[in-house]
Length: 253
Image (cartoon, rainbow, N blue to C red; front, side, top):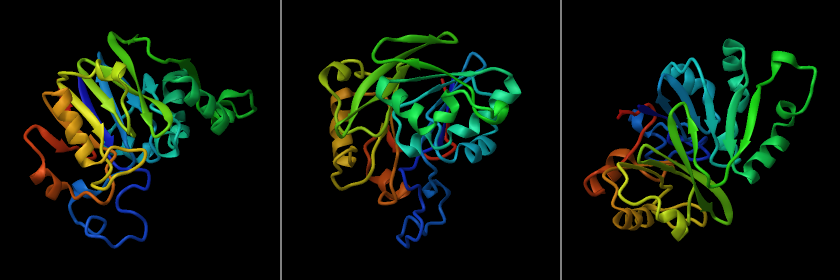
């Protein structure tokens, strides 16, 4: 199995439009962050977690040329804004693509993208999806066991996902005890970490480090990173086996 970080940025991306801060003006490629998404390759099948706003550009950059399934964490625009760009995969593969989300997210997607889920005269001019609602029950995709992990994004219940002792938890500010029990001693924890300052709906750096001390993953990578965090500066401050991910980072297992 291999995973690739399609994007590692927060909702505004990095650089932020009009911002002149040190990170936004940085020449370092690892400080250039498109909206967050993860590509999982397993048994020659491609699975995306979220369809980020820059999905088309991310797919061109990473040469993603087929798509077998989509896992949605939640319905916020930076995580679903590229959904229309899956049309090319439908057209090439000549089939609908299954997608998975909790009931709140699926309901919102059907409002935000009503033309996808309702009958229209658009033909192949719209994406074709097979909607699957999931909450906590594990399911199998192409021989890979996927376990939804309910977490909270502020007051909004969203999903992280666990697979092959790897967990992807982004846009999170609270993990209940039931979900925490599923996240101990991971091989890899991918965790959304927004900034140094406290935020009402996201973990900050100190909150993330406290969580890592409790969960004891073998390795942790931060994603969903704002322009307040410089890649090299923060990496020098982090403990061993903890680091920032970056767009295009690929890891094989």
